[in-house]
Length: 479
Image: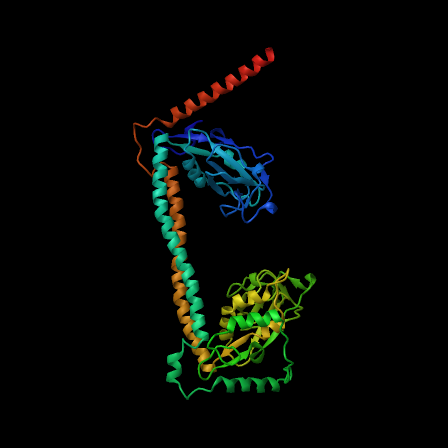
């Protein structure tokens, strides 16, 4: 190979072609289908997925028989894994390769991660890997490079793990903030300062009822809603307390009352729109079909319709009531949007919409439990309307939102720093691999045997073995 075609390398290094320095391990009759994976088993299944282990099995006949360690390459995903234990290969897109003796397997694994392969989506990528070139350092230097990489990566991994723990703690912190908010703990001092000045929530509830009766579209007399035994049990389990009063509901601060979503809001059920009645040309109103459509504050709209059947309005609380995202919520910031039957919209009466949103968001785990238990997870209208909600006076609702958002804004800033640090750690990881790939990570030792001589010796040994094999075949034919 003419090294002039490649970037210069340190003295003693040489460029090699991938296909010339690896051998492929045969997987004929040894691949396990994903449908056969188990949660537990004696043998791990290594596939091309992002998770290091895809599953487990006890099917010994599929065990890969080869000298370890080996490298797993995802033909479709480009995922690279270093495996030094007994395993079984997943069926889809798995390539098992092993470097020849010229390469320390661990360094080979790290170098593979530094190779830039084209992104062909779910097409096959091993063909490009085979044609790639790798720098080959002297063997003693390979060990020194790996030692340095792992020394730095150990420190880097410790930092990344700490950052991930911060993310978990931030999630817990937000939940704690919401819990304290709906117990009245965030506004204790505010209540003391405003004692006797604020209309209690019981009067607010009465006014809501009066206004709804005046509304010609409202119902002055609503029938009682039905709840299944499972729903009753879940709700009681979620809100019960040993010291609770009023039918097992937690005791609330003075001026607050327990009510139900039904008493303070209307519920708009989404309806399906035929394919021919929506478009992709921004004509009409946005058409939202599930949590992917409203996961952002200002969602990226992909569908519109001029024939909406169910309309959600600005500040409505959208709840995913069917499918895998059941229980996910958001507050609508668009003026109007048509909603599919996967969604329902809670529209409050004389309540702070953000207060209702944060309460429903806080109850996400409850919605998930209520939606479980069927092939297609779902929550019905009656279940949502029956959810108990602690109702503070309206001014206190505004204060609660102010306190939540103040604390959340601090958490958001911390999370931004954490995310930036995680990205920086990944960039540093790639930088380390790049420096190793270019021979800049550790100093060279002039006494090391040049890689070219090592490569020549290995090739000579392979040629000798091949010659002996052919001679043996010829002798057998003569006999």
